[in-house]
Amino acid sequence: MSDQQVVDAAWARPVPVPDDVTAPFWAAAREGRLVVQRCARCGTFQHPPRARCTSCGGEPVFTEVSGDATLVSWTTAHDPVVPGRPRGLAPVVIVVVELVEQPGLWLVSDVDEPAELRIGANMCVAFDATAGDQVLPRFHPVEEPS
Amino acid sequence: MTWANRCAVAVAGVGFSAVERRTSTPLGRFADDAAAAAIADAGLTPDAVDGLATYPTPPFEGAVARSGEDMVDVEHFLQAPWARGVRWYSQAGEGMITTSVRDAVHALAAGACSTVLVWRAMYVPPGTYGTHAGTAGGDAAFAAPYGCAGAIPWHALAYRRYLELSGGRREALGALVVGQRRNANRNPHAVFADRLMTAQDYAGARTVADPLCLFDCDVPVTAAIALVLTTADRARDLPRPPVYVAAAAQQTTRREHRLHYTMGDHVEAGTPLVDELWEQSGLAQADVGTAQLYDGFAPSVLYWLEAAGFCGRGEALDFVQDGRVAVEGKLPVNTGGGSLSQGRMHGMGHLAEAVLQLRGDAGERQVVDPRAALVLVGSPMLRGGGVLLTSEEL
Image 1: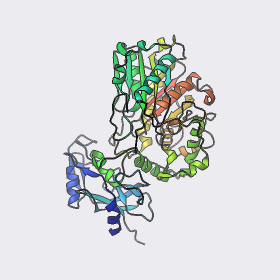
Image 2: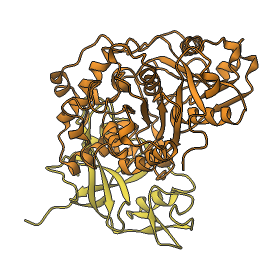
Image 3: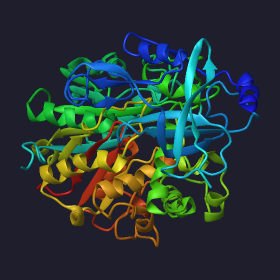
Image 4: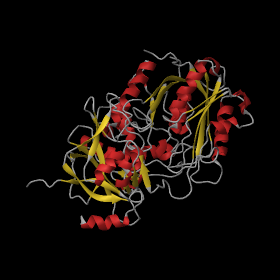
């Protein structure tokens, strides 16, 4: 994590602005918890947060999840594509992960310099980056047992 | 069921402005030029126009959206001295220019007006493209802080997954991209009409967000293109061969992920839209003489080919090899060069090219007797839309 902090120091990540619907996600992140909306009626998870359940129209309730996920896709984004990142720094590896709680429940993250990425690789959450006064949940590859 | 408005409306004229990269000439002048050219092409005078339709949204973050300067909305033409007779207009906030065409068909078929000007004007801002604020709200809050902002990373992520699941190599897409440049080299309306591209150029292009390289991204231009639509009966009395609107559809499924969160299966998102076009028109893949497929990013062409059923899932990279999508091929695709090489017109270039092809006016890049042209715009996940145009009334 120490290397990441050095990189982050030069990267002015866009700061998330919570609103009425999304505020619980960011409040939980500050406590080191990952919460995702889950419908009180049909039990379907959804992300990003919405005013109602997009499956049944029910009431979404933020629910803590395990933070375990698998890798869906990734890209190495070179400047000037990455917002707030000064030119000349290393490109950023952006990933999409699927939470183990539900197929299609996808979140975005960036990862530290990965050795190798493959679809389905195990990932887990850590709360090891900040943007302004917000804490960012980030996903990392899980060391495979050899 | 076939569409109640199938071939009720036709394109009677098409007009192009000059095409530039950055320029200090106000965008409204480009739109005026395109409108005047389209109206003249239809054999009409400006006072005949009594309907207006566009999708005006500027294609970049931070646009001021000032009428006639960095965007051309309905207001620009309502203020035109010749526009006193306008009695209907429509300004789409979503769905790109095929939505405006569909709106115009409905208005004409319902008798709300008799002659509709449909246009799209695009602008390249000065300075760095896509400047980003230091904050991110709404859906962007869940992506931008991780470096994922705007269309490029979203398309890169979707394309990476596509290549991994289909077993394709990024170099193979050069067959499509270089072929489209060859088409643009035969299109006087293309911004890259005079600039060549070789397979080596493509293979060596700089990476933007892998697997996307620079040449997989469309080229921003300042330009306008306009069409004149009228009822089919009236179009037959005008000088140009009518090009009939046989079907028009919008992508309305799987809209849970919007501009700042576009991940998902593009092929699945596009399939219902194309199915609706087949149903409305009564036509099928084998009837299509040319396909104009949105290529804001080159991989979208692959998704549309699969969504339209021209090949199976994961087969489109193979499909675009061996000249199959060239002007002389089995299914000519993006014969005018597309957004990649004609210029980023957000689907209007594709639409205009389809009209020229069906009229037999495409010059050196003319497809032999295409009869039906499929135009699919959007990514398809984001702002998908489509029309099917024919040279004969169905």
